[in-house]
Length: 165
Image (tube, rainbow, N blue to C red):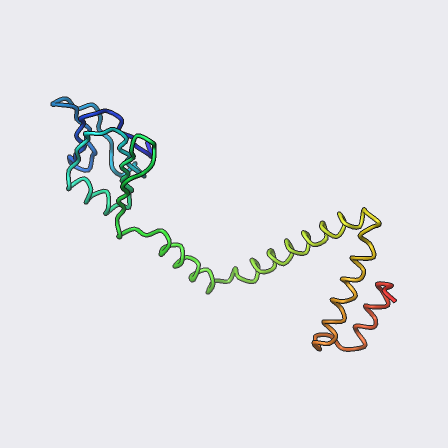
């Protein structure tokens, strides 16, 4: 079980030895191991819960929701101990120092080139877009040349190969 929803009026939610206990009057109607829960939702009115339960849920990073009759959350409690964003950032910084960074960069660049190729092939199907695309390519190459990213000779070779004269 990942998410527990309490929908019965007048229930009590408590904690007994690492288990969430749901009681209605004096009768136990459910026991759930806290380690298997991701969230607890209370959708009924008149439900009470213990502070020990809320403390244990917050330590484990389990969210606790109180939802009104319109299915809109009115209260959300989550602990400060387990913050997924912080853990994610730690893993990202650790990855940055790993040996896999060049491989990831290569995959990203290859993906971008494939996407650009697909877009260009799509527009080349229509002869209406061909002059427009050729003009964009020509302007882009001239901008690169002006920014001194390529030598003048290399630009002329590329320019001639693309038949943009």
